[in-house]
Image 1 (cartoon, rainbow, N blue to C red):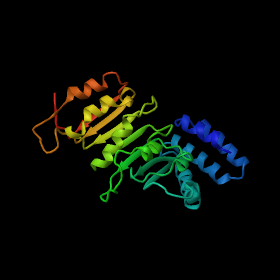
Image 2: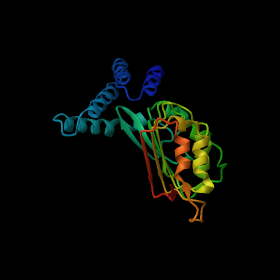
Image 3: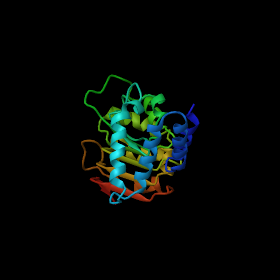
Image 4: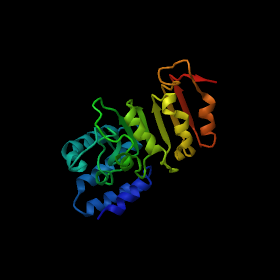
Length: 242
């Protein structure tokens, strides 16, 4: 019944108005606690932490979460970690092998995802990207952080998705651990999202794995990003040549 409200929130995640309209609807449909939570977090997001009203609002936020968070997360699988902002789960930290189901994601307004690796990688097709597509294809997603994704199988799944990822709303990508064998510059060259990136952070880029004398040319990165509306590029701990 509330699908239209949730779609409007995901379509414009920076705007408060769709969330506050939804809060009014929640009040009218016997969910005053969730309505209050949306309003409290929207107000907190606007206030500096030294504002006289901030502490009381934060206390109320914690009280509402303590009482209702499990209900608002719903039944079934949940990500490893999550953060509520402005009334909805906004940030996820999850294992790419075991993301939450699409049905769960449609109840949230996720804008940032951090992908992590686990040691006991399951015996699966590493190139299968459907589970990641459920997460990374979400409307409203603005940031993918793969700096903690260190296993090769996980990266292959991420690469498979990024090569199909194309939306002007996707703004920020953070990658780490790429070597020549993983084709960092080729990955970006093949990724439609490279045209839309506003923020790119790259760490631990080397030449061919195990061959440190080989380097990745900085010009390769520049060539790929020359048409992007890039506002920030951070490259650190990278084995680059000029």
